[in-house]
Length: 95
Image (cartoon, rainbow, N blue to C red; front, side):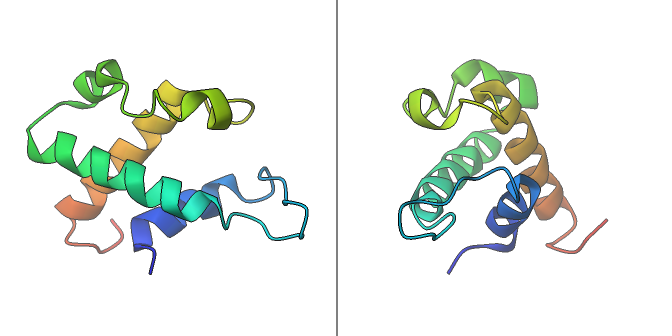
């Protein structure tokens, strides 16, 4: 099951994700999102700042496919890092 932070990313992108040929939206995004969330968690756990996380380019392998349009890799990293860091800081409760 997707985490609350992952689902917030999906809601942020709502209306911008094109459906696949079956009409399903986001099904292939879930594994990618979980993978990137795990990567962001490792950066946060290592004490990296948001700028250090952006410089680490944690989405570089995904950028050719996913960083076309709404989000660039650095923009997605900033949003996801901030969301996960805030989620952790508030114990998973909205601030």
